[in-house]
Image (tube, rainbow, N blue to C red):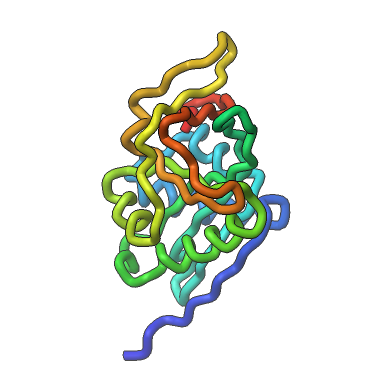
Length: 182
């Protein structure tokens, strides 16, 4: 049997058609068993998307958006990975790695560092690719000031790039956003 053909496309949110955005949202809703909110979707927009299509439609998606994160007194431009999903029938075939390779290329060339928040299942993909679990404190700059996010401290992963190594003795202070901050 001939394997399906796969086509990778990288594009900014502004360059995706309504149909492509609809397909990506449908893939994410299915992949997260309906636990992918409108705010989660919004977090993945406004940056670069990697889409992999096969003979049956959209097979995988991920995006990277810019976040501001203060570390050691310096505000970093962080490529934050969002909305990574692979269609159920083609999971464990390398598509997640293909999406991540493209997102990492973007991060390495355009940002001071890469960061993401991972589920237990997703963490295996990221650690296999060299992403490191952040062992330091995670906070966000909220409307009322600095908010400690202890629940994010065992799900936040980093990929140092231009900024060099990040020191877990110093907190990561994320910019605020509605919904899940990370």
